[in-house]
Amino acid sequence: MFERIVVGVSKADSAKEAARRAVGLAQKFDAELHLVIAFEGTDTGPQSASRRHAEGTVESIATGFSGKTFTHALPDDPADAILRVASEVNADLIVVGNRGMRGVGRVLGSVPNNIAHKASCSVLIVSTT
Image (cartoon, rainbow, N blue to C red; front, side, top):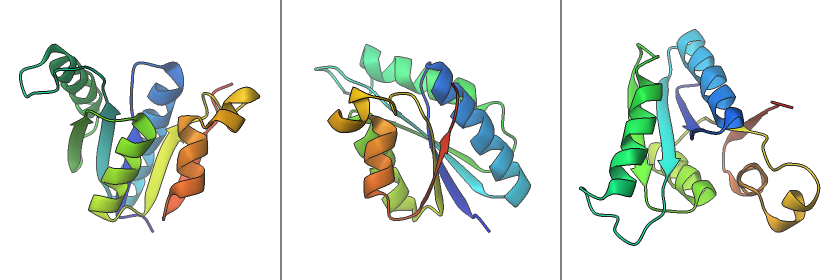
């Protein structure tokens, strides 16, 4: 059913739960798992502190999955980074946590809200509240 799953990760609890669910789905369907983390900073080069920190975070999450795993640390807005990777790998599913889906965040464009409106594949928004 799913061959390529993209999940947005960070240190936020909702992102950790989304990653846990994405890992379970990837194992169940023997799918590729693409873990995406976005980072900010004026220095985004390969040795920048922001990039190294982001790569460390995404790689620590990837160690919990024994299947085909790919990590992506991008200097971008989180929603844009996730959508870009999903497009590049022709994802079947994007998994994100629901953080920011309530109240004003929905109007202003939270990460899950942006992805739900712009994705060209199925989206699973994991409830963590």
